[in-house]
Image (cartoon, rainbow, N blue to C red; front, side, top):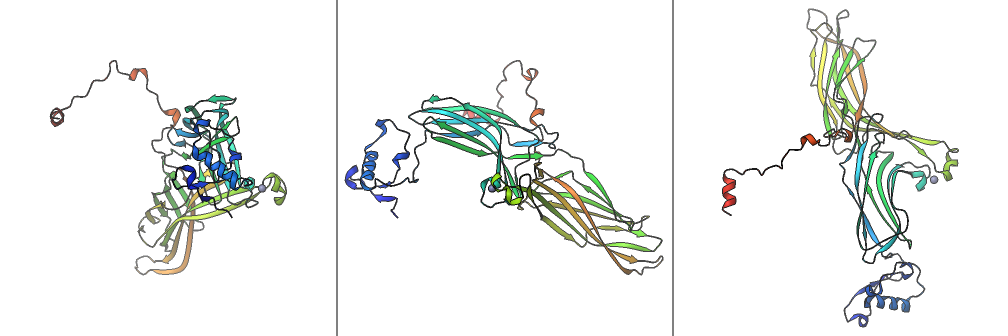
Length: 426
Ligand SMILES: [Zn+2]
């Protein structure tokens, strides 16, 4: 195999040692003004034509591009506040920059697209890009749609878009990913394309603040557990849980329940329906069929053998337990999401209490285990979203009113004390 880098004949450019790379001149559709061509360019071509005229295309260097694109986002991070049904979305705005190189260029089109890319990690046919990803254009801006000459310089194209409030948040779960990107693409008259893409993170935050109380009963016993839980939890933080277990004492039987062990864990449940592309739909029995996958991952777990308060002296006795739970910072997890077409991620906290029954006759301190024990298992859905931060949606932000503008320009603030002296002494 010929080396791509060869020593350059020293006599052809002034005695300086150098290296050359093969350039496939057939792909150089874009011609520079002849004044830009220096002696080295000329020497490389003449050397190539002499040494290897039949060389097929080599991609070590592509054709020079007529320019470059860049995207500057001006809006704050995209956070949709509230549930998908009633969120007003978030504002995405920015500037597309096109830098045209020194020799100018005629552009045929310049387009910017905001797209969502949903990819499954369990495609019907591994390696098939159409089975793996689905790209949807959510918004397109046609900045140049007819042939348009552009001279050397920097051009800017502003864009703004209200990201719909029902869009699922950016997700990277065990089974699938949801990504958003801005893709800019410019095509020249001669067929070159310049592209630039930038990923946009879309998050959701729920603004509910009131704790919720949940009651669980465990028939045939009289046990009843009341839990106070936060309405929303966030990855990488802890939250307090208050639990009260009532109906602990059964006076008639002279028995009572003793809490032996308490365990909580937070589970992430992912679901994905992988669809086949048109070519491969026969593998799963035709169109309108998919393969569903489900995965449960334990994000955190903790076990307690003490730490609660037991009070057998109330009417039916109670056990109170406060602990903090949370999803560790380093844990790979994702927020709740449901894209309505098979991909969903939800979280739940499972609390398990192991209680053992004791026989304790009145007026005696002798306590005997009856040998009866129970596992009280409770499961609570936990809304897991991004933190709400300032929690102000774009449509709630108040622009300054004319009343707020003072009648005269603000005066300079007077400097006092040492500051004045130190400035005057300079
Ligand atoms: Zn396929």
